[in-house]
Length: 314
Image 1 (cartoon, rainbow, N blue to C red):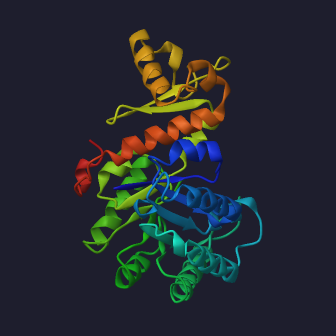
Image 2 (image 1 turned 180 degrees about the horizontal axis):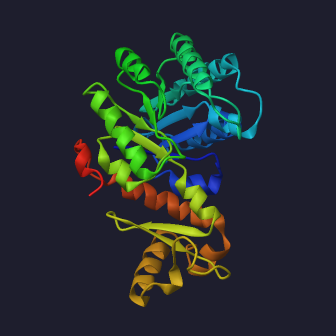
């Protein structure tokens, strides 16, 4: 299972810390300047600090981000030109894989009722975009969303073994798991699914994903949380001198003293800047810690076997 860090915050110091372990990255076309910055930094590292042939890059179209912002939809020609130019630029950087996510059409408008007609039109146009892009750009992945008609899953199975599966953010974990189980049941037995935008042990363990991505490390850091993993389970800890343990997550200072000391010792060994006081004050440092432990947590997990529906919620 490959875990892709989804991140648009590219900085020299962050990348200096991340490059030894963050080998799989997803960056959105919506933040194309950050894609360029990532390439610039990693070109300088290639052959000196790292072997880029062990690294994977995935480009998301950013369609949802643009839709959510209320801006005009992304132009498919601009997206195709960007992808083609990027591949040309990467000719001297032989990544293990460079993949692109289809330019999907998001149904309806933000904060307005979405009808079946909106969904049908969006699905039809998304499939047209995929057909157009795959003739011009290699390694384009279509996306099957929760709520899509399953006829599109069959169409994807007939086209490719590599496509994205996107659970709905507004559904409960149980609803997402039930839908994902349906997808794995109906998909080709040897397909290579990429799970879009989740970081959940239940979802990750429910089926043998080929890869998936999440931006959880950034969201958690922004709200004062540090994500720690011993390789088996997450502990989400609140590092704050203003907020209490009544909020989501366990306040670090309320944990047993021996556990605090063990975690702090490991953090300091990871980077001398990762002290309790620094993590309270500095969101960027929290982000870096979270990047490390999310990759460690998921990259070290064994690929799960496909489990049966009735065992999902025990």
